Image (cartoon, rainbow, N blue to C red; front, side):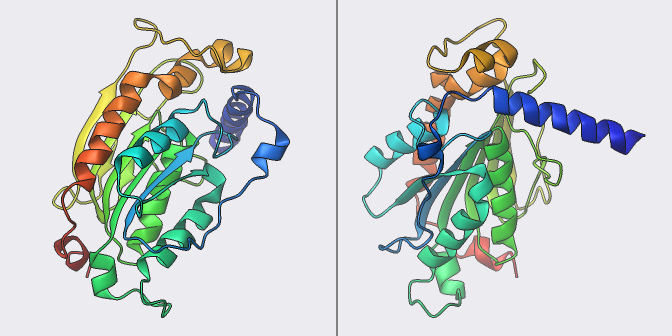
Length: 257
């Protein structure tokens, strides 16, 4: 009975998330990102959008954040946004970028040069944690994960941050049928610092999201507002740019072996 209830609840959540989407054309949704970037880089910033949103939908927080970051970092920095269902594609892009000698094997030196930041909203936030966990299996360190109103799919765990992540932060709002995870923890507190679980209340301080769909603004208003809140994404931007300033060290990689 408990499993049946959980399944039904998940179906409700999935339905609500799909209804909360802004209007996006099917042509845009079909666009994909190449997993084989032409210019290798060890500095990588990857974001994930939530729901069924396209990676280039211009009104969404992760897309706008990527645009802001791209303007502020060196041109060889890899900054891309993926749909949350494209996690494997993002993973393959990272491995390709880090494999600077193109021998198909990541050496300790190549891993040590990795400067990776992952962020996302809703299902995209959960995808960011899952990608960090994928990278852990390869011994690849991650500088920072950022979750904004994180919502996990049935088979995902977005609450425990793997020990290849140096720092993690969680922004969430508590209201509505769809709301973010209130607390994240570290699998190994000695290796991962949780910077905070920051709560926002849009019932007290609402944010206008005029370009989002009627369903999103009226059925899951607080969840939608967490995605279009410029204050939240400005904080995320500052965190990302600060972490990209210092070089990565080999210590993060060595600790995984």
